[in-house]
Image (tube, rainbow, N blue to C red):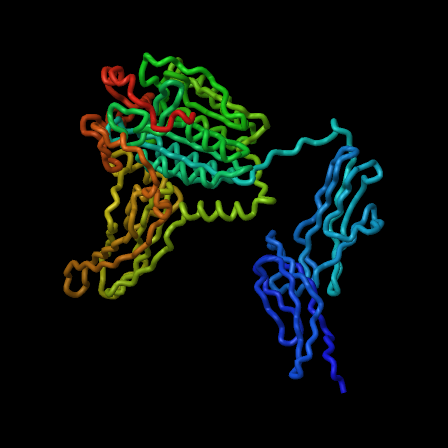
Length: 611
């Protein structure tokens, strides 16, 4: 009779991906949802208070790509990271790494030129001082009691310094913020930012950028949007900021004019470009690009013109100005399409795999040949590029997994569309409500009658929103441009509703669907309604209106902010001044020259001295 407790099956060490369910131990089994690497031991006891402990085991948890792991994985070795080929100089350090999942945990054996390497039995093969004899073909055997598998062979080349290949630049992520201001309360309206921002956003998405595109922002909304943009930047990230709209230059600094900026405009009513770039540099980005399709007229002609000053010492910073100092930037109208001349040529070249400064040089050359702006507009480029960085560089997330997940969540939050809805009315008519967006703060709701009821005919649908969001693109000419973009790839629905300025939403958005139909028996025209709560869609979820700020000069005389999209009645819309013509029009924010001179000593922004 056995009196002592004897463990006949001990738990085993395992290596698994994060969130994988691990079953181990004896009876009863212990099942865990692996979150982090931990040690485990099992205590076995009987009714006589005798006890014995199992072997200590480690469950190693790796937060790496597990896309190739079979759904019915039983613990056989699975290689998640293969070693990579190396080219190293004599005397340098060389590291080959192999990572595999397995339950039990896999064992490793490294080989060079088909021969096993003594004592090289860990997941990392380290060569501290490379010599010619270390060159060759390496691979690793990975095994546990279930199976043995092999990594792909890789070459280690021992080369002289002049033979080393140059490492291709990569980004840990790519993030872009695009702002277009058009419907000004106290300045002439613009037409082109609709097309400019939309087309550039599509091109940047093709290059792998996470893009947030916004139209018609007040100063506080612009500052809040740049704050969110800066939160997405980190070491190794490519950050791109683009602005199309009114702007000016003062004492060597560039200012972007929000839609609520009063006349005459002042620095405290606008957004300083140099401050945005300074904050981008502080994030240690691998590449920071600012592209400005705006005027640079000097606000005060008595100001001393700026010189080309060095940018921050971090390097890899690029400014692309649509025009040079004290000059205007132009947009043109050609039939039904309006575009900024700078952005027109930028979009032409931006997909090319060239250094970003070379792209801007091509834009400059094309613009210089355009007869519409000869002698009026010339591209200016400033940069501290110290590496051949390109907007087409690939994204490498190795070592940045958690940061990438955070950026992905924040980006999706600003671009997530509401789900499609199917509504069944009492009259048995079914209506589908779907959503699309051209910009992160402009949502379009579509309503389509899918099936009609047995006693209904002549069905029509109308949409409205609660609260009411103004359609700032409903004016003649501008509405057609939006429709051209919207319906170029989809069928026209029965009804559409444009919802602009989502960044202003402070509560859930409700879509009211009104179904109008004629009853076949009574011949009466009837209406039924339903409401769909879509929450806070897209950029509304970012709550840009909550930005903390202390600026109060903004509320001084002459600075009353108007709601988005309202144009001063004393200044006609740009497209009303130039019907059907193909002529350049300035993006300069107009103000009284007399008032500008009298205000030459007005204060700068509260914290300008930081620059």
